[in-house]
Every structure is written in C-alpha cells, then in structure tokens.
Length: 271
Image: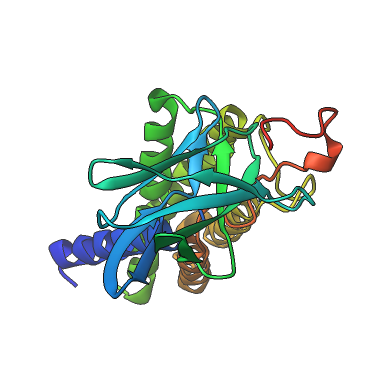
C-alpha cells in the first residue's frame, strides 16, 4: 500500500469514527421530527448545558403553534413543572433552570394550536446534563491529542496487516498520545466539568474512563509483545481493533451523574 493511500485510510477511519461517536452520543442535540396540525417540521433539542446559566430550549416553529415544556430532575420523584414556550420571531423559546455539575433534567415538549397540545418528544423524556465550563486551552489540546491517538492506533493496525511496514514506531505514538490524552488531559477536563479527576474503575462506572483504560491496557500488551523490535502484528492489530470498537461507543455514555438524594439541599434549582 502506497504511503498516501495508507495515511488517507487512517485519517478517513479516524474521522469517520469521530463523527459517528459525536452524532450518537447522549449529549449531542436530539433531532426531532414533529407533525402538528398537518404541518411537519424538524428541530433539535439540547442535551448538554453549562451550570453558569439556564439552559435555552429554542427551535423554529410555524407561527400558529404554541406550547409548553414539562421538566423534573432526573431520577427523582419531583412533580413535573410546566413552563410556557414564548414566541421569539420564528422560534419558540423556554429556559430550563440551571443545575449543579453532573445534574440532569428530564423534559418533554408539547406543541399544538389553541388549547390542544401533544408531546412531540414521545413518551420518553429528553435528558439534559449540566457541566461546569471547561477552558478552551484545555479542551482543544485534549480533543487533538485523543484523536491523534486514534489516528496512530489506526495507522498501526493498518501497518500490522501487511509485511512491508513495521508498526513498532506507530505503536509508540499510539501509546504516548493515548496516555497524555486519556490519563492527563482527560482527567483534567473531567475535573473542570464535573469536579472529579477519575470516575472509572475502581472508583465508578464512567464508561469513557473505563474504555480509555481498556484500550491503554491492550496497547501496553502490544508494546510488551514487540520488545526488541519485533512487529508483534497480531497484538498490534488486536489493540487497534479494540481501540476502534471502543471509540465507536458514544462519548459520555454512562458518564458522571449527580445523585440528588445525596444533596443537603433537596431542591437546588428545582421546581
């Protein structure tokens, strides 16, 4: 395989996995297709917000429609609280009360004409999670480094498929970038966003932390198997495949979640 094609495939696979992970993640805006009064329209609802302000829910809707939002704190017995959607030009707008870091709200959107309104979000509510702001000087390097690790992981796997390239140098890059992105920058991002450095095994069940640890263990095994310059193609290929599968798992799935029952103030920011 020529060098250009080799790196083109590595970049394409990496970008493809990044887009898939982003689009399927639980914090990515939810796409909704609604049909109200014989009018069909599409919009997006937020599933992530910052703790510094109330979360804006805004979407374009035909002028004759009106409605409201019902919300409650996630996994609580709080009563549903109703807030009216207000008209702002071509949009309907409402604001959900800000929550502490890792706090979540469940909400449903009801639209109609006149007094009749039905849920356009179905029976299952939309879940929005709040996080503290993460500075750009940290989040940007984290994203670059972690996907750099994915790029070199993919390149090492492709190199392991043939006999002309020794994947050893690419393995070093994959291990180094994964360590920096997943065990230095990643925990710092999580500390800023949710107040904890690590919430994976053995301290918790955060899937992002755990999948990073699993991928890193496979790459350490590949690194050890390739001692004295051996290509260890089977180990490298296994580590690359595991890393690709792990990267396809939606980001923030089973992420940090505030337990409201453990708070001294039983109703912070609530109804």
